[in-house]
Amino acid sequence: MSNTTILWFRRDLRLDDNPALLAALADGARVIPVYIHAPNEEMPWMAGAASRWWLHGSLLALDQALHQRGSQLWIARGDSLGELRRIAALTGATQVRWNRLYDPVTCERDTQIKQALRDDGLHCASHNAALLFEPWEIRNGSGQPYRVFTAFWRACVKQLQQLQPQPAPAALPPLHNLPTSLSVADLELLPRIAWDQGLRETWTPGEISALQQATAFLNTQLNDYGVQRDFPAISGTSRLSAPLHFGEISPRRLLAMLRERSVDPLTDPWMRELGWREFGYHLLYHFPHTTTEPLDTRFAAFPWRSDRAAELLAAWQRGHTGIPLVDAGMRELWHTGWMHNRVRMIVASLLTKNLLLPWQAGAQWFWDTLVDADLACNTAGWQWTAGCGADAAPYFRVFNPVLQGQRFDPDGNYIRRWCPELARLPKAYLHQPWTAPASILTAAGIRLGSDYPAPIVDLAASRQQALAAWERIKITP
Ligand code: FAD
Image (cartoon, rainbow, N blue to C red; front, side):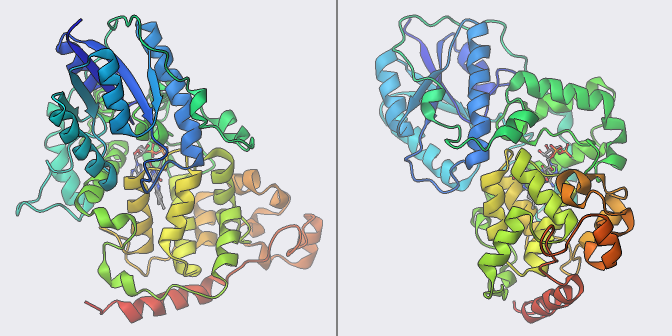
């Protein structure tokens, strides 16, 4: 067949609502689905260990879905442009299509690849599979990018009506006589040392699972989302962040699923969270330096601590701070590759404000350990909590993990689950074991400092230090 299109999969690992796939089929083309693993491209923000684990499962699921429709995934390893050229030469492909990515370095690489392939005489086109709106489509009245979420989302919701997902094709053109591809296992994405048991117990990557998860959430939990979303012991949120990151489900599909249930996306609080995801991508696209530098330039001079930094960071990473809600969150992250949003804000606030450690160190740890590690959402989440991002919380809003725990984990179920050594402590002391009388600690089987750490920081004094640090930088233009 003369008309052959390479469909270059990246983080759009689905067949439903996949514009590049549909455009390739509309060309009337033989479609060659390709995934290229490019570990040597020396890009910053290469997938961390938990993300690679997810990617392995997601690629297997995609290959299976392609086989069910009469096709298959061609897996290659090497530099992206070189592999695309090699596959084009082997198959006689005349076109290459893909869905866009938005992180700055990948954007630049993709632009270069597009130009190089066009110079080779290939037709290239890219599409939007990941977002409701392209980051450059939404602008304020003066044509500038937004820095405030509410105004950004107001501009978006006006245009939601026009968005419709496209169904997956029932069948795909068969592929004959293709050279043998690598297998997913050949990419060696899984950890060599088996620390991933918690991930395996918690998640099933892939498009089918993502749709099931979305359906179950929308059918049973959406109505209570506004109330339950803040309680980490309850499964009150969708847990769709990793499927969204890997493109196993499309935000347009989720929007359509809301409409099918007669939910008004303009007012729905869960839809608004998808809006925060869009806002993160908007910021990343327009302010690409913010992956490493604060959007609020006053924070470039922030007096982060230099003493005991490595020791305190390690205690935070391991969930050994002696502050139960923080430790529970960090252990949930290590075990499952995910952490509840409220707890993400609390652990990030402790790191950046009470411990005065730079938000970039926290963002890096999340990058390696989250299955949903996403440059746009992670950067925005860390900058927001540290006080230096767009629409950031006022700096004086230092989360108090004790009060937060009493309010959002009132029975202590979340803490008991992830810090089992505290399980026998009465509720009154569970969020601050250091205030428990010796007799209560003994009765609960806890020696503070050996069975469970004494707090590594005084919450009240460190809050004052953080506010003083803020006073020193806040007037700098
Ligand atoms: P739900 O509450 O069901 O929300 C639905 C979807 O909306 C999510 O899947 C996600 O795609 C999006 N969303 C929800 N909240 C936010 C938010 N605050 N910002 C942007 N998008 C949001 N999210 C990531 O996907 N990847 C990250 O690397 C990431 N890092 C974060 C770091 C920090 C310090 C903070 C405070 C937040 C971070 N978030 C990140 C945002 C948020 O915590 C997760 O998206 C959410 O907890 C995922 O759970 P869920 O799918 O059940 O969310």
